[in-house]
Length: 636
Ligand SMILES: [Zn+2]
Image (tube, rainbow, N blue to C red; front, side, top):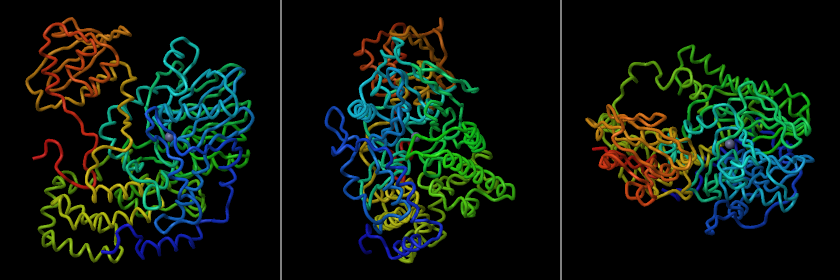
């Protein structure tokens, strides 16, 4: 095999064909003008670092290679998008409205009030949020923060909150924190309880373990990369209901429109004084994810299209801002953009349901669907983040779930057993690998990764299968227009070559979100660690009293389930008095009994029950195999 990192002739030919494809208007430079308009300052330092000097955000690493024509290892359309996401720094959007873009996965927006600022979406981590605020203070002026708005429930829009305000700012009433109905519940549902299962998949999608460069990560669609650092959470003080409403913050009116879509709880924010509309992540400069491959509930595409359509009510809008990428400027440009975004979502939705209604199954619909030329030619509907192919599967799942209706797929053999039998029917592993080698040469990469995946389920350590599969994944990555697909394929190649990572480059996990939740919500993170088979036959009640807030909850173990309820239970067998931070760390498994005691927790009643409970709890690995199929926890 030639150098597996080199693009093959097939890959190079595909890129040349893309360059000639009339769907791409390479002469259209409007996005470059929008992305660069209003730049006040572009930082020159090589990276944003944390207190210990660790890099949380690269400038230099992306700067080194992101210029000129697309290299042969990157799809030319994705390359164009990556160049646009590299317009970064502090921007003056209009008088009184500023954005820091390209210094995080997401954008932060600052709106001047009479005496201070409103912050819309304080980025993902404390380090990048504080860095962005400092840019504003240095180049525009230092004023107090009056309010923080969370546009929706995803951590890239609230995780940096403690980089711009403190708990004390909020508890003293100095700063309001504004979010939409159901915000905290959805944060936990989408990103708290599923955080452990999502972490490895998240790293694949965002290329967290890939080096920046033409053979590694070039972009994520939403921005260059996901930053490292500390994720934080502060509960909202003001909830905007489903009817929306106006708030006046220090002389500035904000009109909120409840707008579920990309997130199940979110809102758009119109600022009449500046004729500026912030549309959360419901629209940006690439196709959205109706389903995201890190894993999440499929989103309600009808509701989403409706949220975008209702935004047309702000007829005076001159500037449209969103949580990622760059703004749209101009009244008619904004209206056209919103209409096209609405139509893109509805087209995916309606055509999926049409084909579903003829009995097509998800993989057939994914293969069949294409945008009509009038939508396909729009740069802002190209699939750099969402992809038509995975979105339509999500829409199908939203309505009909995982099952395609065919009883032959209702109860399939598990993958290892299925692979062993299939390969035996096909003449054995070595015969299959030999044929896969030829198909790889022919450029049949989708088939090669499929058939070698079977081999690796049957024989996870088959060296040649791993090498060939890695080579096929690499070419699929180079050929992908979608940034998250590229990252996933290249991450698979990396795992196939080097094995399961010992950790992620960014140790940040969404688990931090759990620490900021109400006690009752956080205790549910404990329930999902309970190993059912170890809990068989046990039963007890434990009261939890949290010192700082006086909150009391109890957990009842019954039928190998840990049920949590508000309030103390007088029947409790044991009671634990502990701090909120100790509870957060205990439910996540960061500390056990000894750690609880060290934190000053007091256990009364049958103290031995706590040790019994701890012995029934699983610890989740930071990383589990994704592309390699080595044995998992508990697998015989
Ligand atoms: Zn986002």
